[in-house]
Amino acid sequence: MKKCIIGKKLGMTQIFDNKGNVIPVTLIEAGPCVVAQKKTVETDGYAAIQLAYEDTKEKHLTKAELGHLKKAGVSAKKHLKEFRVDDVAAYEAGSVVTVDTFTEGDKVDVTGITKGRGYSGCVKRWGHHILRMTHGTGPIHRQPGSMGVIDPARIFKNKKMPGQYGNEQVTILNLEAVKIDAEKNLIAVKGAIPGAKGGIVFIRDSVKA
Image 1 (cartoon, rainbow, N blue to C red):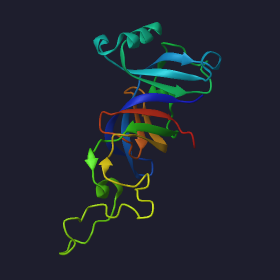
Image 2: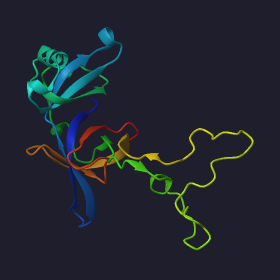
Image 3: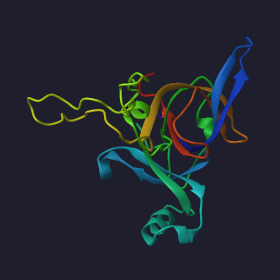
Image 4: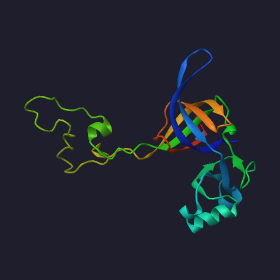
């Protein structure tokens, strides 16, 4: 059975293993989530479940969202996310998914929204080299330089240029779930994950493990 859950990034810390090695981990408050919808191959063409996470007030949701949740007997929730699963027989609308579905040592993929850095230059955004900080170079030390060649008389697509940096969905693959605390709904994942503290992340078992 595939594992999945919605969580909130709390920040990074470090723990020690049995050999005394330091392991940098990211703490995630994962769940509890409620199954808001179950999709089957017969009715929808594919198997998936929709999880709802984090209580909110009904006035913060639309009538359509409230009707969708009430149909499954779920109270007002702030976040909804659909996960593909192999078999939905183990899930029922209104059932609760907790962090203890994962076990220590599991390989997981974590998806989050990276920190938004606004409009950034190509040095910060793409890691371009700067020009020499000497006289004669002019006030163009951090500019992108040549845009292209004369022949096509245009700039090719996908040219690395200044623009919006960050605030995009990123998935980190094959992270290890080092520690699970079912009482506090915490999962410690080895390494860093996308997003700022308090950001919503989606955790599923690894697709490439």
